[in-house]
Amino acid sequence: MAKRYPKLPFERFADDAIVHCRTEKEAQEARAAIAARLRECGLELHPEKTKVVYCKDEDRRRTYPNEKFDFLGYTFRPRRSKNREGKFFINFSPAASDQAVKALRAEIRNWNLHLRSDKSIEDLSRMFNPILRGWLQYYGRFYRSALYPPMRQLDRLLARWADRKYKKLRRHLCRATHWVARISRRDPKLWAHWQMGVRRGSMAGAVCAETFKHGSARASGCDPPGATHLVLLARTEQQARIAWDQLQREFAELHLVVNQKESRLTKLEEGFAFLGFEFRKARGRMLLTWPRTKACCNIRRRPVTAVLRKLNPVLNGWCTYFRVATATGGITKWTGRYGAKWQLWLRRKHQCAGGAARGRGNYHVLHERCRLYRMVGKVSHLGGLRRKPPEEGDRRVGCGKSAPVR
Image 1 (tube, rainbow, N blue to C red):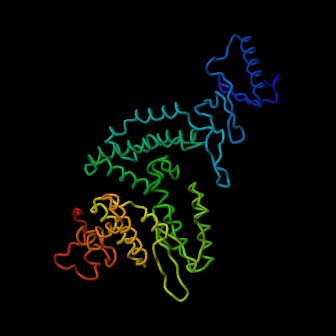
Image 2: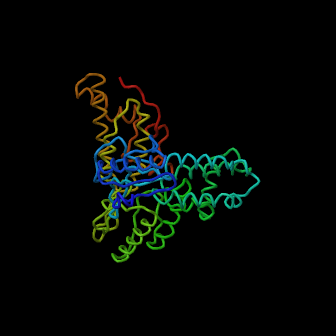
């Protein structure tokens, strides 16, 4: 190679080699030259393992029969990657091969962790942590997410081990899984794969959630939730920008990206949306909250079913949730919307005119005879939140069976 093709880079390990070429013609010439040289030495190329591979990526978008190959336990093929600006693209990159991952899972099964009840979790860590660390250092150099399945299998085996070892966890695999999760949050350095980061192993998400919780909570003075939506409250714009920069740095350490389209710095006078509510403060007035227009549209699109007892829990839940804000206007619109849909259903069911449908589905029939939940005038279905106790024999509140409508 150094004499005939000095400009072509190549790598070799034992009897495996890779030659990098720019064109298909150059690759075929190099393959023929290598085959001729090996015949002079009494050797030959393997007919199945020797092939010309097209390195497909964002710039090379053609289609060829061979677009991937294995080398030293890695599979090189087109994969989805992310650049420094946070945009995704197709890159020809390596990751642990399927055969290597299968071998790792077989080796983990051969450890028989669930049968080692005489050992503590610290003893198991000392026994198998060096092997795990070697796997992570070798196969985790590129595209570490390929190691998630075997590491999740190891966490499941640890849960089975805890289920057999401790009497309180016996025959409670879910409880044993949560026990292992608590151990991973308390001592993430106990096992090597617990330090892989977010979404790396089934127990690592709790570790990263705790790190995010304590770090950004101290910086912004809030307690962030476990979901993906977050609101940071600050007294000044400078404090808000400092908390915003701290949050982005912590997300970058966890290999996460803040959605720039849905994230912004705003004032209470401008308002913001959160969990279906709109928050806004008028000048000289207190903070007001009301249901968003989008949430109201989603509610209005829900179909009216023939059996009203299936509809009552939904109306009851909406009323209970949105009643904490100024929702009189929205609830009135919902009531009128469902009244119109109910009349349309009656027209189609009985094939009658609009006037007859309004007579069949008037207020008395809907709320007193059919016991449709009346949202206007009701605070909640909870007894402690009612404005006044219901009258004896009043069956308009609740989710009872619907009376037939003739």
